[in-house]
Image (cartoon, rainbow, N blue to C red; front, side):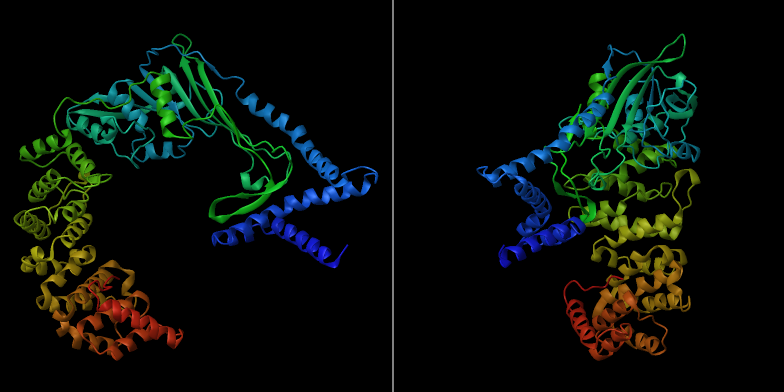
Length: 625
């Protein structure tokens, strides 16, 4: 064998070994796009060398008189590599089929299910959430109750959902009940486990908002402890079998467990015996048998993880389940079980929530807890998922709520203000600004049942004012200055403090006062918002004011010289930008900036400072902390 061939063989073997040990090197090459062919060759080397190596050994033992010995050697090696899959795959196929052997469909519609129970597998904190006062009625539960598909809906869970059902298993039952007043249902997170066609109007229906309308009308969602025996139909969904290893971890183990199965089953609770009888079962199985040839290939995972494993194929039985898409789960409930889940229209024109909110405002009184939850639920999603943002009627409704201090400020008011600054009339924006500042002066208090603490109200008001046009806020200088002197506003309304920049020189003395109020917290003032927020808000506002706040330069120099102003990290950057914007000498600003960059290379500091100066003098200065 020539030396050149020997060297090529050695390099190929080394490359194959490297690919087996460090397959991630191919990922690095593939990221560059140009290196994609190299990565493909790198990952293919183990398989190529395995076939060539086996063929070379077989070739040596073949009789010399045989024609086309190399071809025969390669054919025999490929045949040998096909033996392990031929032996192993029938067992994998048999185990996968066994999981679906008991599947059946004995459902006869209509089910006549007055009470339905759900046994989900993925709700680990069901009991804890219920004990903490949260509603654990998910989207299916809400839609079934609101649409009348069920009079009662029970939820029970356990680690292995497909163990034998016990009628005595504890559950949590929900039902709608008329009452003179309702305690609003409290959700830890918005339930979402159903899917409806976008072309249908009920896609826009919000089950939580529909529930809020019922609560205002005196129909309450009531939860209590119960047992599965109280249900007529029990729906169970969850994993019937989890594979022991992930795709990346199968490695070169021929007997690796690659079977994953999810199952939906339906039981009917017999009235006489109160025992469950299974009337439906469907198991969706996915598994990965070996490919026709036993060859090493790369397997890719999250975060660029790469492993070399035996080549496997993806196979499935009864594909499609809730775990594939919400649509499959919804179709099963509506088509197979005959449940009416899409919210029914109320027959009224327009948004019923807006109509209800107007009626609540017209009652000329403070809202009840249920009424406020209806309003808050509407505004929490206003403008989300729409191209044009909140509607004008949302702005008008929010303005009416803000004017009545018996109501808290609606959630996401800032988003409504931000989207309305172009189309809303200046007089309307001016009126809303006046109402917001009046609230800060009045400090209205609300009962705990409304869930509107004053600190969060200040934050929402300050962000709304920040989104107001500068000229509108500037016309309310007296109210802005008065609000910025309040201790609670200073701690929770940083965006209002920053908005003082629209007042120009008028706000300089107050901005210096805000900075001093922050520094009064001592060396570690930034650990508490009551000190950090006035400091940052005052300095950010001064930075945005630019030359109109230049009279603050002597006070800033004095405090910098005294060593009281922090120069590290973002504090130093913000102070540097502020000095430049106020017209300070660039060398002075550089000394301040470099003091916070100790240990860095001088050339690097100069380069970063030059970029900072350029941004500071642009139309969009970096005046954010």
